[in-house]
Length: 242
Image (cartoon, rainbow, N blue to C red; front, side):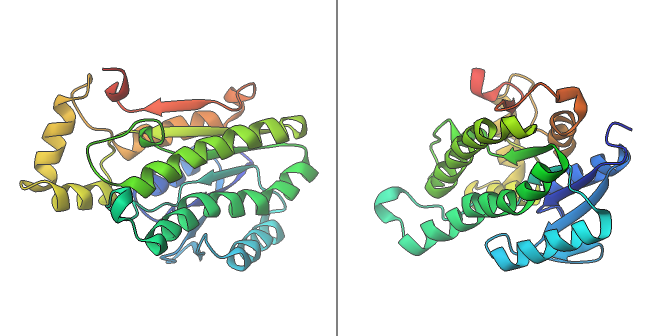
């Protein structure tokens, strides 16, 4: 029960990695509030690009639970599959609105409460593609995930004196609906071919599962990581070291 008596917000928590994180936090005793554009039972319907929706949802969490101990900024989009010379400016802005502006707005909304209560833990989801290029053309995705790393470092420095820790997870290939859609779209043999390809190029010879990321998020969110801030934890089966 590593998160007993803690209140957590998980954005994009209705599916994929976000759902796994929300479930794992609940298993460890946390009260979990999910923000997701899909809405649904037990979720706040929140578009992370809309500050008014975020503020209203955060205010309601405070009204109901009195505090916010953990924020996981997981909501994201893959963005346009285009190289820079073919990039549409609107598509570029749309990716940054979700993947970077969304992180900033959600962090902005919870910070006053964390400062008031004397601390908190923020876990941001970046990607190994925030530090490495690929043969594909998900250019805005790479750029936004690099920006999340920079924002996380700066916030770790800025709010360390308030006992607010800011750390980042960098997943590699994780079996989620988003990755399955990508594999089916890009590889002639669909997701199965992509999974085989990615596994061959990974030292652990498999792609990851959402719970692999959820367990890492749990550690960084918990008091076990109370002296860790500004860290960037790679979860890729060794893909980026081979």
